[in-house]
Every structure is written in C-alpha cells, then in structure tokens.
Image (cartoon, rainbow, N blue to C red; front, side, top):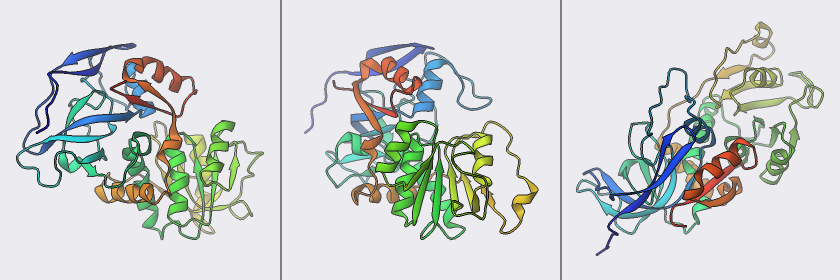
Length: 330
C-alpha cells in the first residue's frame, strides 16, 4: 500500500509578478480521476509569461488573482499514486504523461501532486526521463496541424517550411521529418534557434528576411506546405508567397491576415486554420518519442527547482531559454 505524505507543496501566482511555493493538502481523486505524483513540469512559455505578467493570453480573457493553484502548469509527467473508483485504464504505480489541458478552472501541475482526469493522461511503457516526456502536450498540439495538412494529402515526400523555431516550431521540424517530408526549411530571426533546428532535422534555415529567401511560388526554394508557429500576420504573408499548396496556422493569431487575390492562381494556396485537440494526435506524438524521432528534451534549456519559477519565466522572457523544466521535489 502506498503511503502518501501529510501535505504537499504547490505554486500559487498570488498577483502579477509574485508567487508563493506553499503548503497544501494532497487532493483526493474524483471517480474519473487519478492522483499523480509529479516528476517534472515543462513551461508553456506564452502561458507562463502572460499569466505571471498579468496579461490575458487571449482577447477577452479576464485574469483573477490569486490564480488557480498549480496553474498554468499543464505539461507534466509523473506516476499514478491513487485512482478514482471509476478508473479502469490506469493503475497505481503507472508512469503517465498529460496530453490535454481542457482549460477548465482547476488546479494545475505546478505542484508535487495533482489530480487529473484519467482520460487526459497517457500511460508510458517506455522508460524516459521527465525532460523527454513532459512537453508531450505541446507535441500533441503541433501534431493537430499535421492532421489538418493530411486533409490535403499530408507532408510525405514534400518540402515543408516551419516559421518560428521556438518550442512548437522545433517540434514541427521533427514531426515533419517523422511524417516523411523530403526536406524541412526553418525560418527564425534567432541564430541559435536556427542552428538547433538544423540539428533536429531541418535541411535549410533562413532568418526571415526577404533577401535571405526571395519571394516566389515557382522557384527552387518554393515549398509545398508550411506551418506558421508565430501567429504574426507578416510571417504568414511571408509563407503564403513562398508556398505552393497550403499554409497551416498554429500560432495564436491576434491580427487580421489578408489573403491576396493573386494567391488563388497557378496553383492556388490554401490557408488552413487550426483543428481540435485529440487523443490520436497525442498517441502519434508519443509514438514519435518512443521511436526516437521526436526529441522533446532538446527543447529544455535548463531544469530548475519549482521554487525558482520567477527566475525561469524571466529566462523565457529574455529569450535565454526555449523551455524550462521545473522539478517540484528539488
């Protein structure tokens, strides 16, 4: 029988720019939930920077502080310590990784323990470190864009561009190769990220300047499909004028994107929105990890104690890190 401690530590953002690493009672799982001992949690950079900074992530979002305990931590890996009475898919002692954050107002994974719906966890049968697994939820999100591109035939055998080589873009580079792209082009103004993309499977990288990759949809540099991981209208426009078949939007778009009439012709290029999070995408991403085709640990710049949360988020803000892995037990 597993003996749990009397209490745990959890992070609370008490107000913008301030946090507390405080004692709390260990939660009890509901019938459809399991209790997870958290091994590691990776940042979702924009979420962390926005919530800690008091800045709404989406238009119309209202933030209230103290923020939900343990939030915005949602990219997590751990071990099941207790199961609700209705759970039949997971058992005590099973390593698991979170694959979906439903966005409901609830406690998050920036804690030593957390309860989570069993359906939103995947069992891990392959022995991996927290750095290799914690960002699976991000990989699931990116895989959804490949599902959209699959509606137009997929990326196999095609030349694919990825704009924005932050965490999502670096995952997209690897998933493009996993799905059989003939070559991958990376676009980012940060030299270090371009260099990392090359080590992860990109064949060519550009800094995003018009002089580095000339405009044109009938040149040797033209790609078949693209994924935008920036959400920036000028970057989407940049891709549209260098892509033949489709541009999939992954980054959160906060400004109007104009589709020029000339893009309809010879051949027309499709601008695709995002899809829905789904378990199949998570399972594909996990299969890529197990096949050593997706290295999520490459996204982790540094591992820090959970008590150094503010320092970690500041590293993200200053672009000194791609992602931070927090250890709640250090």
